Image 1 (cartoon, rainbow, N blue to C red):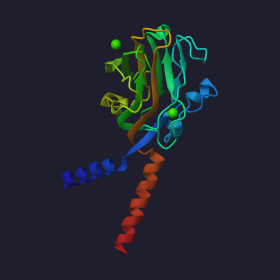
Image 2: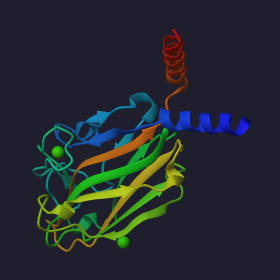
Image 3: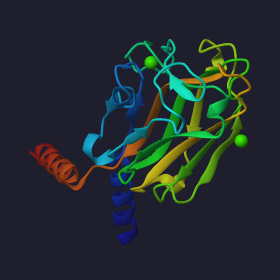
Image 4: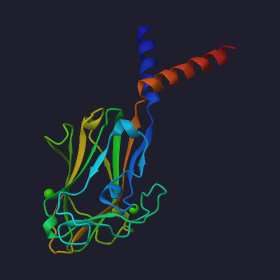
Length: 224
Ligand SMILES: [Ca+2]
Ligand SMILES: [Ca+2]
């Protein structure tokens, strides 16, 4: 009897979480660095407390060696926001530069990261993607030595899908870091657009109470 009750409780918890688009970065507003790195979609707004930081390169906002820039973006994974611009890191001075996304995953599980990617012929052909669960003190590898296609966003290989390690589930101080290497010219670039995070979102306590209330109401209606 107790076992059946326990199984019922587990099934209820499973049903309360559902995969959803949590974050989308379309890099469409290049009016300022802050605008460029603001999420286009944030469905768990306050609780996620995200920060997508500008690359750790010398920043001038123009297409110069060792900076970032926006080229024409892509509709690949655009979540209905259109292609407009993207985010590109440029030039040999950017080698060993990094880009970091910090967020609070305390309500998240089954996290999936996607991004459209491409590079120029002399661009960064060695991109390491790492994660941290202590805000960036220590790092673990997700993907080593990623080499984007040189065809463009139209290449089917452009969209990268990464099931993030379960070690990130429920963690409050998650960071995802991209490290760029392999650029061999001043105009070399690696471009990305439409970085998304999908996850199961555990309802917050207030939502759980509402759900429980709705379930009780439904049960009462069924009895009547
Ligand atoms: Ca875009
Ligand atoms: Ca590497």
